[in-house]
Figure 1 (cartoon, rainbow, N blue to C red):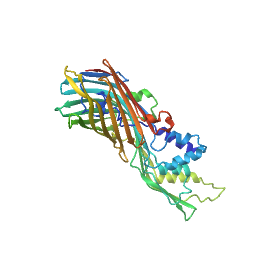
Figure 2 (cartoon, rainbow, N blue to C red; figure 1 turned 120 degrees about the vertical axis):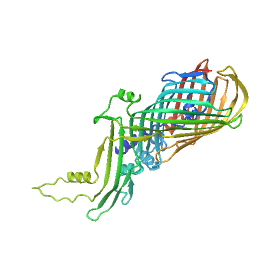
Figure 3 (cartoon, rainbow, N blue to C red; figure 1 turned 120 degrees about the horizontal axis):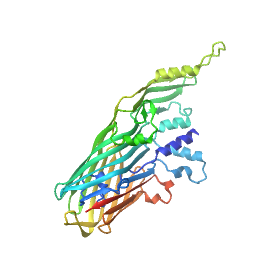
Length: 456
C-alpha cells in the first residue's frame, strides 16, 4: 500500500506542460508571441484578446515514465511494473507544471516605430525532482541497504500560484533591428518550496545491537506563504484568487528581447523572460529541522513495578537531538528565468499585405529554422531544441509544424494553426501529436489556444 500511494503521488505530481511554447514563438504575428519575445515586431494598429480566452495553456507529462508503463496489458503483475518504474527513475528525473490563463491582453501602436502592449494573466509554475534515495527507503526499507548513505538533499520541490500584471514596448530601431522590454508585477497567491537541504541517513552493523542508525547533519527547511493565516489553513478558494490581484506577497520582474534581420530572408531573435523575484512577507509558515541523531535500538528491561515508556523516551531524545522550529519570517523566491533563441530563414513566394499606415509590407510564404529554449531550474537547466517549418497559406491563414527534442521526448511533433476572419483571430497549437492515438504512452502532451481581435 505504501508503494502504491507513493507511486500515485508521483503520477499526480508529474502533471506537466511543455513550457517552451515553441509553436507560438514568432508565429503569425500573434499577440501572444510578444510574451515570448517582446522584441518581435508586428504590423498591427491595435489588438485585444477575448477576456479569459485570449491565451490558455494546459498539458501533462512525465520525464521518467508513462501511464502505459504501469497499466499495459502485458501479462506482468502490477507490483512488477511498479518495481521496474522505481528502478528506472533517477534523481535527475523531474516533473514540472506551468499553466497560464490570460485575463487581459491588449496593445496599441504608439507611433510607426513603437508598439505598446499590456495585460494580466494567472500562472501556476512548479517543479518536483524525484528523490531516489528517500523513495527507495520508504518503498524497500533499510534492511537490504546496510552501509548505504541515503541523501536528504535530493528533496527539492517548489510551487507558485501567481498573478502577473505586465506592460511592454516593442521598438523598431531601424530596418534591421528591433528591441523590446516588458515590466512585470507579480502577486503570489500561494508558494511552497524546499531546496538546498542537507543531511544523510545510514545504517551500519552495531556494537550494542544488531544495527546502528545515523542521521547526520540534518538541515531541512520548508517555506510556504499564502496557505496559513493565524495558524489556520486557508480553505477559501476566493482568498487565493483575491491574492493574485496585487496581494501582500509581491515582486517585480522584466522580459527583454530582440530581433535582427541579418538579410531580408534571414533573422535571428532572442529573449530573456522572468528575470525577477517575489518577496513573501505575510501569511508565511517556515519549518526548520536541524541536528544529528544516533539510534542503536532499544534494550528492554522488564520491571513490572516500574514500567518504562521506551517509545516516549526515544521520541523525546529524537526531538532533543533534531529539533523542529517554526517561524513566520519573510523570505524571497526567484522566478525561473527562461531563455529563447531562434534563427529563421524565409523563402518561397513573395507576397504583400496592407499595414496599419496603408502601405504594403512584403513577406515570404515559407520559413524554416531552429529554436533553442532553456529554463533555469534549481538543480540544472532544462533545455529544448526545436526545428520548424512555417507556411502562410494566405495572408490570413498560417500554419507551423515543429519537431522538438527535450527532457521528455526525442520524437515530439507539434502543429499550430492561426486563422483570421476579418478582425477576429483564433489560434490553436498541439504538441506531441504522435501520441494522441494513445495518450497513456505520451511523456507529455500540451495544448495552447486563444482568440483575439486584431486591427491592421
